[in-house]
Amino acid sequence: MTRLTRADLDSLPAYVPGRSLADLTRELGIAEAIKLASNEVPYGPLPGVVEAVTETMLQSHRYPDMGVVALRDALAARYGVAADRIVTGCGSVALAEILVKATCLPGDEMVYSWRSFEAYPIISAGVGATSVRVPNTADHGHDLPAMADAITDATRLVIVCNPNNPTGTAVRKAELDRFLAEVPSDVLVVLDEAYRELVTDPDVPDAIDTYADRPNVVVLRTMSKAWGLAGLRMGYLVAQPEVAAAFRKVLTPFSTSMVAQAAALAALQQEDEVKRRCALVVAERARVTEALRKLTVDVPESQANFVWLPLGDKAAPFGAICEGRGVIVRPFPPDGVRVTIGTAEENDAFLAAAETALDQLA
Ligand SMILES: Cc1ncc(COP(=O)(O)O)c(C=O)c1O
Image 1 (tube, rainbow, N blue to C red):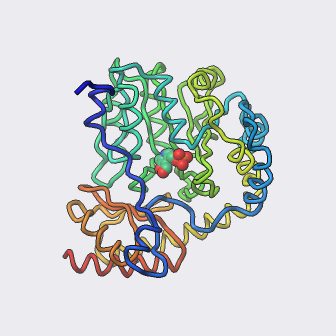
Image 2 (tube, helix red, strand yellow):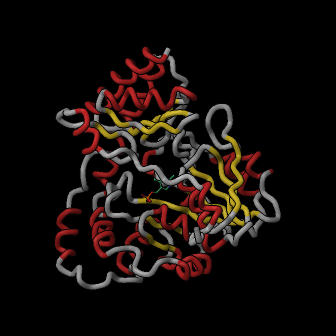
Image 3 (cartoon, rainbow, N blue to C red):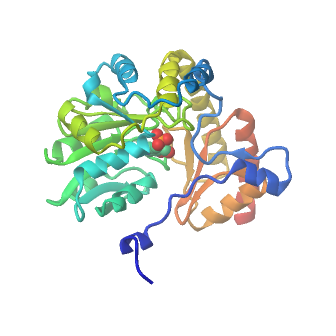
């Protein structure tokens, strides 16, 4: 058969979205299944977002503002950086893709920790770059000295996911300072801070405040998690102006939709509510972690809105047992299971399912 697509894509794993809530609810014939698989914050859209989106829909036959001027100005004011340093995109995953596109040619190397965000191997393969995966430490965090050692003349990009998805671990300022001092100046370092708003450890630096002025650093953020806009797709990055300008050249035109721009502007007005919600998630994170540790699972401290159960070969059956009890979690066989922090009731349902599963798998 004539081959129409690249042969190297055959071995590429497809991105696995969390299982559909409607699907499982139907399959189990229950009132409603619980989804703790995609790291969403469970409290609904922020006040004002639905209204902003609804009003914007009246203009939806028009293209959005391609310059994203109002939103970039609002983000610039909020984060204290010039607007020409901000690039927005259709979720931060799309921005991660353009970072790779703008830095790597086929065969160039991209270094990241593993296990980490499952989109990294996919976006690297998308441009034919070589993924260099540095194994996590025994306590499930980034091994920054090993990542620095993995940089070669072929390395163009290094990603530090802080806190790390799916393990929840975070790297602290002193180790990140040391690492950044070792990275050659012609290698771009991406600090992916999708979960920054959930960080409570004061030693974990805010990369926009701490590192964004370094010429080879890019900070990646999303409004999908704490800001509740996952379904509307709004991510942004902060880079040096000339680096940001290069990113814009490979960005899909009009990829920050009109509704995403309006929703993000409305969400930015609600920072107090975002903080209140994050505090709820953080309190539940502590409670769930403590409860799981009593079930004798080695649960690392999480700085994000999920916890990691390093269950190894038991990851897949653990996930299946939880699903059978109406709770969708996210197994990453053969390493472990990631469980998003939900509402107190959702977390209770998960803890009950986890107890059953761990009993059965003991
Ligand atoms: C570490 C990390 N980066 C980026 C993203 C992408 O988020 P989005 O594309 O929704 O902005 C995620 C989503 O799960 C993530 O965990």
